Length: 308
Image (cartoon, rainbow, N blue to C red; front, side, top):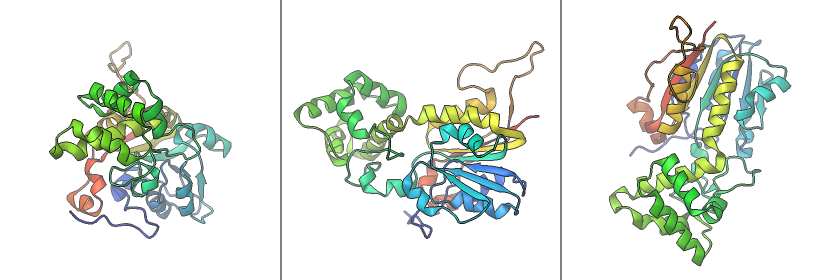
């Protein structure tokens, strides 16, 4: 496997960097938002496309990401969850924007920080918080949730077939001793699958817990609804997702204007939608991009344009 290349601040090369920024169809003097700043790769590319009148706002609730902020009068990094994008842009006097980019999921930098508890590869405390100031942690989910609630999150957020057994095994183990670290959790559940599928199984369990800790699907829904209202006519929304739950929400929202159910139509049978599906089919990384960053393998990008 090719080694993942990192930029100078230790963050991996952004996924779909060129195609995502190109998808914004940038107007040089426009207003743009990068709601997942991270290492600043996408933001830097956007700034390079703006003139002196352009503006870029970025969001990131991870304190470590703020160490990568730029010294640029056109740029503002906001320390908040992007679910509240509309409120915080209004605070800065911004009512409408020309483009919004979201690279969802956990950054490679967070995965590689063992103490954050995101990865099955490193020992660390069960944390998984993207916002280190919030109260709920993975440790609380694993040790305090009722068995039926654990079963639900494993089934709903990771499609684990033996979710009931996984939940029961965790409850039995924590009754003996509190589960505090990633390796302790792995030791509890790893025998519930075959050796061949162990890594995939463990990754699914960690994904389900992480989604619950950070309420990722609810945050995504709030963000998409706000993004649609914020966009100017012909403004672009670019979203990169990493698992089917996210991609399904994004796809349905772009095509139907809602997250589930059939598309609504007017009296004459015309679809009642406010966004145009620019990509139609999800854009995926090239083999070259995957070689540079193996995390890109699961990425899917969708682009929407606000209708007049």
